[in-house]
Amino acid sequence: MISRRHLLALLGMAPLAGAIPFSGAWVSRAWAEVRRHGLAMHGDLKYPAGFARFDYVDADAPKGGELRQGVLGTFDSLNPFIYLGDPAAGSAAIYDTLTAHASDEPFSEYGLLAESILVGPDSSFVEYQLRPEARFHDGSPVTPEDAIFSMEILREKGHPFYGAYYANIARAEKIGERGLRFTFDRPGNRELPLITGQLTVLPRHYWQNRDFGKPSLDVPLGSGPYRIGTVDAGRALTLERVPDYWAAHLPVAIGLNNFARLRYDYFRDETTLFEAFKGGAVDVRIERVARLWATAYDFPAVRDGRVQKLELPDHTPAGLQGFILNSRKPQFQDRRLRQAIGLAFDFEWSNKALFFGAYTRCNSWFSNSEMAATGLPEGPELALLEPFRADLPAEVFTKVYQPPVSDGSGQDRKLLREARDLLAAAGYQVKDKKLMGPDGRLLTIEFLVDDVTFNRVIEPFIKNLQVLGIEAGLRNVDPSQYTSRLNDFDFDVIIGSYPQSLSPGNEQRDFFGSAAADAKGSRNYAGVKDKAVDALIDKVIFAESREALVVACRALDRVLNWQYYAVPQWYSAVDRIAVWDRFGRPAVQPEYASGFPDTWWFDPEKAAKIKG
Image (cartoon, rainbow, N blue to C red; front, side):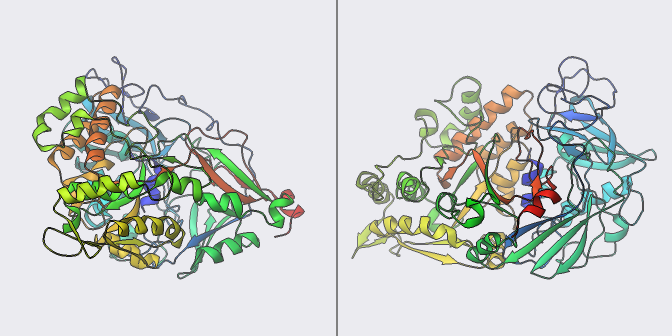
């Protein structure tokens, strides 16, 4: 599973014990035809049928006001579901999905467009009954035909992510007047019933005569709590809350979507964006740079309390952020070279000198979760790996993976000597202080980034690579060019992130599957094409218990770690949010999200007290 927040970021599973159907534990083979108001991946649903609202919202939150957010770059499309173009921030908020995610449960979905859900035996199919009152913004009803059309067009013309995510859906069909059934190509995919609930339902009558695969600034038709208001192409977008939103009365919507307007203003560079926030033209800033958090927030509005600095705990798995090495490129196809490059990155120095000690290093593709590999493989995990022993690095079975730990000097001689030895073993030789490959050609590496904030991290890394004789360089490009080159896999090294959920599943195909390695626009940036990885992804997706899922994830993690597809970077256990004190928020923060901006609201009394 990929969380709804991460799903939208890409643009934005299902259990039962005993004979009672799909409300908890992993679905058993004993099955009864019972329709539910929601589905849970771990244990029972927290919220029973007929619940009033989520615990982390304020049902009396006032509606109104505006939230202004700043975005870097530009946009040329209002279609967030395709990989072509630069979609506008917030452009997915105009649509509803079959189900809504609860942010205080590991993974649970409750009916939104769907009023009831039925899961077949062994998760062989899932059925939804749509709510009769569900409407698009033009007043037309949301129908099963719309959902079927959406599934088909997203897989055929949407971002490659959808093809991988929904790969095991064999058939979509209408059942009765308002019923919808997705039949799967094989049973046992316990996650798939829930992730079908994440389907964004598009209006067939709007899209059927338009080119869905082409970027466009035409304002599309939605069904969600917001509609697109004003559009200043490439510069700004405003969403307007729908006053007669059809689902406003539902428990999954009460206390949410409180702002009358959501405005997104675009800025060409980070400095201008930060100055706009300091001047009050932007209301909120989610700070990604530890140095700025520690040093740059000493301005009058912070000192007198008009701007608040919040550190909200983040209990979600960290996944992996790192320097992603494109193994499609000839110079990165040797595992020893990839390992040597990692030895030249001094995280300890970076954390001390650049980040004020704010970060923990990623040591796994599932960092900060029980899915991260630990110790040596044994028992069921070893059994999963054993068939591929001959094709895997020996270390998978004999060593515990940990990223290298430096002396914090910025240029650890011991680690650089290890890197030289690896390069020599791979056939590289230094001639006139330049590293020449086995083919006699100079080894060159280019770091591609669209955010100059990372320059201060990359430049010391480059210096260490140059000590090894590697001709390394840095190229900064604008966001549009960056996105285009990512989609075409036209890069040597990028900074990439692989967010993970508490229930990894079908999205792993898009991250690491062999088919995704050749699909332009996929997130398999490293170009992983490995039969062991493909087999382990299937074990993750078709795990029959929570324990089996954890074992499969650990095995997958171990293989990816020892292939050195990435140089791990870092993560933080808190979300850093700086905000002008014009807003209210509930007393309870959801366990697995910050709550911003969904549960917040504009407070006119607070706003009247400050100037900005």
